[in-house]
Length: 558
Image 1 (cartoon, rainbow, N blue to C red):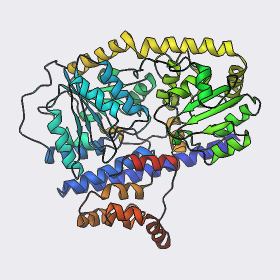
Image 2: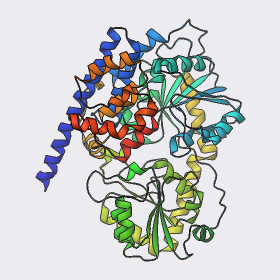
Image 3: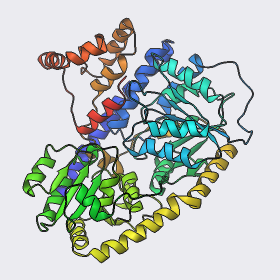
Image 4: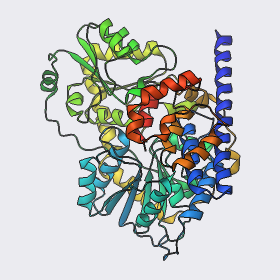
């Protein structure tokens, strides 16, 4: 058994190395376009490289080479006459938040609008780099307008046009915070020339993933200690450039008593409701029993208990679990209003293999006991749940049998549930709301205006790695966004002739692509099935597909 495990780890490490070599080939392609001064092609090649590294773990969490490519593009395409230098003014009245795309589900956008709602002494504006045709959540718009700021949706045709627009907007701010997807290249191009720009901080929300933007960020803000440790060890960020800000929680104003909320959802008062809320891909298991199977093991013993999962649709292993438990596992899909589910719940189960910290914190805010299954060692803590206040309140289990036994005890003991839940509520209020959170925010602002200017990353981080955290990440992302999908996604912003030049270079790295990149977007979507068929006939279709890849390509669609 040990030998089999070692063989599996060895195979995963070889996959990491292969992904690293592919990524380096993509970076070199972007460098060659820079050398030829074809900067738009270089920017798109860099987007493809960043997307690949974000969802096909290469053993790297940052790339000095790729960041330098984007800095070179930015200094050649977005530099302007220097304005008066506002960097050391010490003023933080006008705040700009840069977001890739805002959505009404998920924790990243909610983080921003709650920050704005609470920080009433400042004017907050938002710049959205890839919102496209998605509606901006009204709660975000309202928060910005109430603060006296502006919502900017960057709608230039290509990435360099967006970067130029972002640079113009940023010059009017006192400080800038980046809340961007790991593959968003716009800020790096926009802020390559730091003259005349305000101090900039990168807020690391996806702390387990590859990211871009460290070399333009004077401060790197983390939401938890494990993410900070990873940035020091694997991103080469100095501790002096670190900031810390807990996820802000909004006060809970329950509309229903628990019994009323259960009735509203169709459950009896004596039903024990287990709840989990996360995006569908966070429940996709790379190996071993998945979330639905483990939950079904418990529910089969307790006929009065049900599990409600908000995020995934009732398909695949969710449907199997529902049938196995006589309908007591309910996957209800994505919902923007989750308050009734929290009000009805008795126990909260964190998603696995990917944790969902924001949902855990929300559950604690409602006084629910929190249970998390994270079978990783301390060296890979960044892959599990983590936030200020969790150390003394989160029931964190590293063994599946203990996880199931803990859930069973909570189902059986109502007083135990109430006691643990109340402690969680108290701790979350202390660290994630009120004066405690405002003290952390004030310290972030202070450190940002006092921080020395950002500098290029150290080259030695472009080497890849294959430790425990890398192996686990590669397993979890074993069927992630393929290179052909990234090419299809980003090449569309190029003129047709330029697409051919890019494709010619990419064919040296991969033969996976779609002819639909040469069609208008509406026609490509309509003929998508046919195009996939042609690719299979030509032997070019090598892509893999998961909920994670679908979610990623949807959110960054250009």
